[in-house]
Image (cartoon, rainbow, N blue to C red):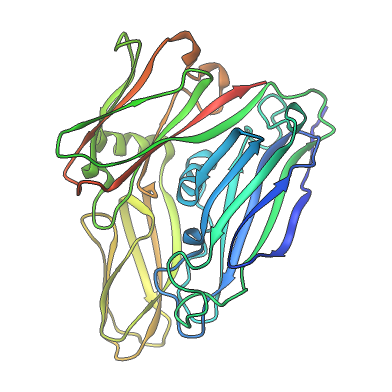
Length: 371
C-alpha cells in the first residue's frame, strides 16, 4: 500500500512583530516527517550589510509542557538541515536595497518522505507546541535605512504529514543542544557528559568564529563510553573535515552582497571547509578586482569601481556553519545507530586549537527518541 503525504499550513504569510515569541499548538494527529518554516523580511532602501534572516531567528523549539522535544538556534538548524537532507539550502542572503530576504528552516523529525516507523507522533504528547523566538533588531535596528524595514517580518509554516498512516511511528528524531562553552587555552580539554537515554544518530560539533577555521578552534575530538572501554571515534579535526567531505560531499550556495566603491571587505559563505568561489558584478563591464577564499574559509572581496555595487557570489564547500557531523552508522538505517542505552557513561572530549579563548563552541545531538 502506497503511503500518502499532505502538507497542512500552521501559518501562511503570517505577520510577526519585530520582536517576539510565537507558541503554535500542533493540532495534527497524523505522523509528521518535518516542518517547513519560511521566514522573510524586506531590506531597507539603502542596503543591509551582513544582516541576514538567519540572524533574526533566535531559536525554534518543540515542547510539551516542560519536556523539550526539539530545540536549536538558527545556525544549528541550518547546519542540521545541510547534513540531514544532503542538499544545498536556500538561505536567501541578499544585501541589496529593498530586496525581500527569505530563509528556509526545516525541522527534520523523521526519515525520508514517508517512513511510517520514524516520525513525530503528536498524539503521544499532551500539548505539543512549536515555538519560534526572534528579533528583527538582532544585528541592526529595523527602522534604520541600513537594516530591515519595520513591520516587514512574516512567516509561513507547513508540515509534511503521512496521511492516514497505517501504523503509528515507533519514535522520532530528537535534536537538541548538549552544551555551549567558551574555547579554552591551546591544547586544553573540554569534557562533556552526554545523555544515555536514547540511541545516537548524529553528533554535531560547531566551532564558528570570524577569521578562524573550525579545525583550528577545535583540533581533536574523542567520544568514549564507560571510561574509554569503547570509543566510537577519536579523530583530529583536519581528518574529520576530509571524512565529512567523503561521506556528505559538497554543498553549493549563492548570495547577493553589496559593496562600497573601491572597498576591500570580507563575507562568510557559511561553508567553512574546502571552499571554492566564483562571482560576477551586476553591471555591464564591471571591474571586479578579486574574489578569493581566505585561509579561514571566508572570502575577501575587492572592487575597483567608484560606485556602490551589487555582487553575486557562488561557492562550493563543506562544514556548513562551521559544523562537523559524525554519523553513528548509516543515517538512514536505525538498526545501525549507537545504542547508547547499553552503556552507563558517555563523554565527549574536545581539545582546543589555536582559536581565540572564549570563542563559542556548540555541541548538539540527534537521538532516536522512542515512544
